[in-house]
Length: 511
Image (tube, rainbow, N blue to C red):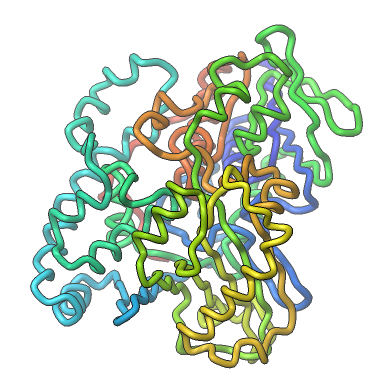
């Protein structure tokens, strides 16, 4: 049997996952990456002696990452060092701080002390959302190539747990009365780039996943996961072509037959996997006029996530009183969120996230110094905000808030190097469609079958991985999208594989 030739566009987390699995199963895998390192938005960013993650900094569902390495006969712990964080993060409200932890007894006591009368809701939350999670996770491990997928017994068993018609915020009212405590369990919708007042109720299980399975850091940053996956691709005989941009996908009618590189070279392939941002791929990489359902005109009518304003700072000082992860809420969080999502504008009262990983990981900065990562959710580029003009003034507002709302009162005196990435750069330099950092919104009409399919429905021999396809954005689900596409290709070419199945009892213990 001839080995199938697989061309992967982009060495991001999804493309690397699919690539290493398919290479292990015997396919000829070539990955084309325009940058000189793997990872896409999961790659490392270096400023002098300081190292940062460009994008994702939260690692949840560690067991799923471990499964991806198991698919190649390996252990993730042989390639990366995982560190469990506790407390998970610091949540800072205008009048109090809250430190969620994986220790359930300690969590109940902290709720009792900080939000009296709500402590019993935590056990109820863990019980009910755990049940939802166990029913829904198998639905996220299978493709939705046709409407018939909704008749699968796996989906039918999960359907009553979808909370159709309810929002994430509504659902939290079943467990808690305290407004700030609800927000402590709804801010996870940031992984989806959505407002908790609009986010579908099924995503209430996001917080459960944190409390049940922990939040982890990887020594060297989460970018080291992509470095490890790239190493596995090479060990399995696959090839990653760095500094090699794909100009377009080549097709004959509806049949994709390879890719054309920016150099003009054409690479034939039996199957093509696109790991580029979906909106960018649909409007820039696929043959003009080939799409109807996902054409540029149709994309303009779709709902997309928010964007992000990023600030990376190398400091000549450490702030050890800050946690590894810190979320500082706006004084009026709901007004901030609704202004951003509904009016596509910003207020001076905004929320922001600070990663201070040097308190956990000494490899990211020289001794006594620290690498600080700051993210502000902002409107995507449909807002019309001129970030070339507004970027620097917004940076000043952000630093003012950091010095006023945290212990970093002397921050300005200790900045050695810094870099800003605005929505303008995300779209222009990183090929993120309209700078929607978390891709297509995860509303009910854009999930499962209604999201771009892993086996792309508009062209043959074309597959998708990443946040723009099923199951959605966030590292764990992006890894799963890579495995789903790898399994679909394996099935089409007779490569042996075992369908994934979720069994809580078989999840590996902490490493």
